[in-house]
Length: 480
Image (cartoon, rainbow, N blue to C red):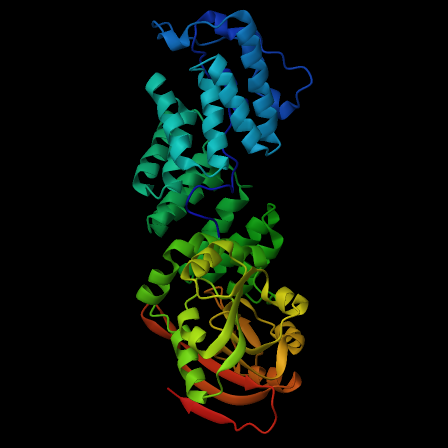
């Protein structure tokens, strides 16, 4: 599953790849040979024409900023340019930006340097600045294909997807770049505009141009999965794997649409990236559009148990802090842990948590010296299949009479422990949850069957489970 925002699945185009086709901005004197000795091939590709091959220079009068620099200044600008390329190719983007800007200060208006500056600013997640630089190039050369490419990428990152789509269409119209990457970005943008059928067609065009483009196979598989065309999706994910896509992530995708072995958990980097990207819209989308209610249902039945007040509570997978206003009145101290730093920034802004930790929940439970008498996990285990490590880690993090409360999606097949659904969420059987509790010294205090959220206006059935460490508790079963 790729992002539809034109991010780093494919490195932003730098001028090292297209310098042979770029005009210089200060007349023929600017086209002096650039030395390439000692540079790796990836940096010298396309520079041969600058060292004696045919050149395109502007013949119209140049503004004063484009006047030919003094020889020493030109040599220094050239050196800074190549140092910037080296920094870019080794992912030292802060340094690359400074070097390209220093080169431009000595040699203003050079298109190749401006193109590289825009590429670097995109890598630094500063699309507004990259957009301004791309527009500066287009004011000088209206059909500069790399400027259009960077402009479209920046517009996508700014969620201006219709404008981004027009930009990629301009790139394709100009026809001077290899078509695979522009068609791929075109497909990403159509996905962002919720036009999946058209996005599929764009990915097919990208793959016709380059059948080894793993991310296009991956994104194609993601669309087919959402369309419930599982066999086609599985084939696309297999192709992505065959062409070098992230194996852990794509085996997870493949397991959701095929009989492939189900992994124990979702890949941590998938969950972290998903929620970092989702943080700004999370509350409105989940609660407003999907009718999410796991946090409120979990807290309501917890309060009804009348087991508080608690000394110290831990909110596992706290996210943006939806549970915090509901848990805080029940406990003297409230901590939260989550994989997504962007989600935790939202939680921190509430001012309700006494402590927030950016970590994997099992790693945190295994390493903490804190002891909690209340641990909650609302809608967390949809990303965790095998719950044994969680239960084992709770043993050292919970007080002897603590309470563990969580929600889980309910598996359709009670004979399975857990299953990975095409939604990329895990569902667990009630039998499995009861076995986990018994094996790890917990006693079922209460189990509530109730909807967790909606998906395409259909309720997603779940379970709200309340487990105690003390013996002799009364087991109750409720339906709601």
